[in-house]
Structures are given as structure tokens and as C-alpha cells.
Image (cartoon, rainbow, N blue to C red; front, side, top):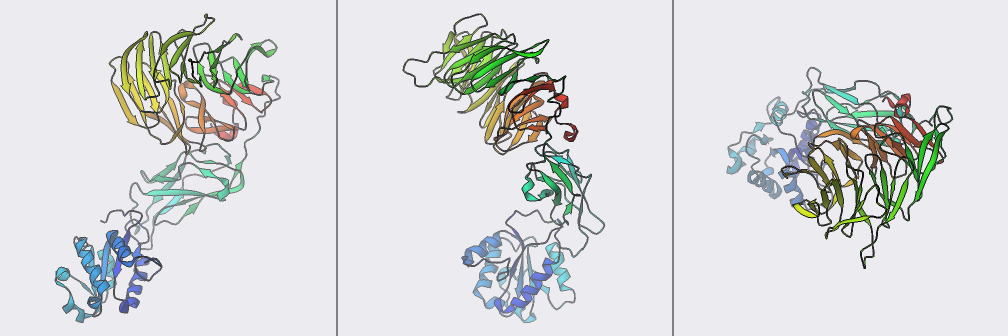
Length: 576
């Protein structure tokens, strides 16, 4: 059995003299009517054909490349073949490349008189006389080709059904079956998927290997509505198969904005829930407002102002914090108490940018600056307390009592006990997030994920499961990373990937619930999506937030915030 070829290889290279072009072209056409062991049409190299040498190519370099990347060579022995320099060159190159071994060189004796001219280097290789009645069958057999008309068949397990823009479709299964007389479909063969019309913007993993006779597409979504769309599955050696037409609809407007039992806040900003899962806040421009639930509904009970654009958010046991690019940090409690702290910049520093925020178990907030200063904002202190100065600056930060984990701009993770360095670990230059999971610290870098055992201080490093990371949400039971193409994964404290998903290129995770199993993603156009267990089930054109316990959501329409159960988001079309 022949092995699968690379994308640029040929199945057959026909070596012939120009005077024998008609016979070579007839052989070329006969071979194209065959199928390979994979069920596809063979690729046959024939100079002067449309699949042969392109115009303007260096013939010697091109022929040598074709010979290096072919499975078989068929040489048409004729009286003129052994008189041609190019044919002699091809013959000796085939010998040099060991193509004359293991049945890869098939001579076809077109003229019995040519037998006397066969050179010594290939004289030991048996030829197939073209004078035999069924010589073409012998050639096909030697090349591993078949004339069978039966081909493997594709079919969809179930109709695609209606779809909603931005929502992940239910898993779609394409099965591959091989009727009697057809080549057996190999395990691992690829099935590809496309959509018509093309402007419907089908996204997701569009080429899937066959396992157990089926290819399962689990992260498909459409980017634009279509009155009538069709999915088409294709695979080598198979006739393409299409679904029945179905509609791709725009997301419905939330139907309960005016329902009397749904609290609506006159707030236009980005919503966020406190850790209690009941108290919402919103950041409108640079104003953070806390809303408390009273008998008359939600009321604003506290506000605070940032000076610049927000840069970082953090959640503690009861409190939340937001820091801006100027070094101002706002800490808020669910009762509406807010405090704004302007962290002083080092003498002579031009920038005073917060690099990381982290709450400890007592709800004290630690703020690490690019300059290297680390501050502590306790619940009762009026002024920030300087903790230490980390000379390499701060990229990521985790706090637990007396222990501080500081990821510096030099790519080192330093463990402080009190103000003293207890251990250092060299990670990588760009660190994107850190979280504590039991006795481990997980640090997400641009290239790798690092797991540090805080008891024995053993460090495990694994390569990122995605490349070109654009968003990280570290925390809870699962840590989420998303790359530039919209491929996302959620992994646990053992670095095992628990959920994989596909979203809009450029999306980034901005919120989570249920330990990371419920995600909120922000798209580049400002819209937000809710992802449940790897499937996008709700998309809105404005900000969205979910409570940590996954029970409530705050949805914006650009003017108001609606508070409602998460279970109601998306409606019937989400198939949640």
C-alpha cells in the first residue's frame, strides 16, 4: 500500500520522448480515469500537459523537483527514448533518487526493438510490453490504481436546522461510508465544510479528520444573516453532499425589556457584578456607579471617578476594583462605599501604569506597577501602603497572606514571603495572567503555560495550545485563553484542556462564571457573546456581564441595563 503524499507530490511521473507524445498523452488520460487507494483522482505529471511544466520554468530544476516528489515513474521505452538527452537525464536522476527500487519504477516497452538499448543501470527491472492485450491493467496494478466507479459516500447525520448569527451551531456530523467495490475510507482522512452563500461568513473548524467513520464539526457559526444557506461537505474521492437549505437569522431583540418583573437600570456603561452575584455596577466612561437592590428596584448608592481609560479589573471576596492608565485605583463595596486612590509615581518616572491587581483572602488589594512598586490597599486604610519594590517591574501578581507572587518585566516569577525573596523562577519575557489553584500557581505566558507547585516549588511548563494569544482570563476552576484567529481553550489546574471553542477573530474574554464554564467574550466591534461549555448561545450588540454563580446577567442596549436570569438569554434558537 502506498503512503499518503504531501500536498505538492505527484502520483505518477511519465518519462517519454517528444516523438511519443501521443502515446504518453493517451496513457496520461487513461490514468486520470482511475482512482487512488484513497479514492481520489491521481496526479499525473506529463510535460506539455496542463498539469506539467509551467511556462517560463527552469526545465531541469522543475523536472528534478517533480521526480523528487513522485511516487512512481513510468518510462515509455521506444527507439527514440534512449537517444534523447532529457530522457537519459530523467532515467539517471530516477536511479540517483532510488526511484528504481521497491517497485516505484515501471518501464513500459512501447517498441520491442528498444529492448536492446536499455542501459545497464535499469536493465534488471522488468518492463511491461505494450504488445500484451491488457497491458494497461498491468500498469494500473503496478501503480496501485483502480478503475472502480464506486466511491466513498458522504452524508449529514441530521439537518442543520435554523441558525442565528454569532451562535454556535449544535455539533454537525458528516458520516463517510464505503459501498461495495469502493476503496475503504482511511481513518484520519479529512472532510471539509463550506457554506453557500459565501458572504454568510461561516467560521469555525472547517476541516475535520474522520474518526470512527464520522467527522464532527463542533464550533461552527455564521457571521451574517442569510435567507437561505446551504452547508456543503467534501472529501477526496467523494461526491460533495449538501444540507437542505436553512435560514440564518439575526439575533432577536431581548423580549423582556418592558416586563414588569425585570429590573431595568438607567445605566449606559459596561456592567459588572460584585462577587456576591446580586449587586451590579457599571462603568460609564470614567464613572463607576454601584447599584443596590431596594424595594423600588435598583438604585445608585455610590459613585467614583477614574482619570483615564480603565486598564485592569479585579474581584475579591466581596469587593471589586478598577485601575486606569494614570495610576488611579477605585475600590468599591456592594453597599456603595467607594474609594479612589492616586498611587504616587516614582521620582522622575514619566509613566505610572498599573501592571497587575490582586486581592488577598482578607480583601486587601495589591497593586503592582510597571515601575516595580507594589502597594497594598486594605479595607480600613485611608492611604495606600507601600509593600515592596520589585526592580524588574510588575506584569502579573498574586497575593495570599504573607506570600506574594510577582511576575516581572524580565520574565521571572519571584516569590516573596513578607518582603524577603523566597524563590525565583525564569519563565518567559511576556506574562499575560496568573491565578492560584489549590497549592499551585498557573502563569500564562505568550509561548507557554507554567504551573508552579507552591509547596515543593517544582515548575512544569507546557507549550501554549494556541498561538498568538490575544486574550487571557485567569481564575476560577478554568483559565481561558483566546488567540488572534478566534480559537479558544479553557484548561484546569492540571493543565488539561476541558473546553475548546471558536469565536470571532480578535475576540477576548472579559468575564466568567461557574468557575470559567460560562464565559463572556467581547468582539472587536464592541458586541458581546455568551459562551456556554464552548458554544456561543447569545450575542448582543452592547456590553454584557454575568454574576459569578451564573444565575444573573446584566444586558445593555446602549441606554439601559436589564437584569434577568442567565437561563433566559438567547431564547429558543440557542438550543442551550
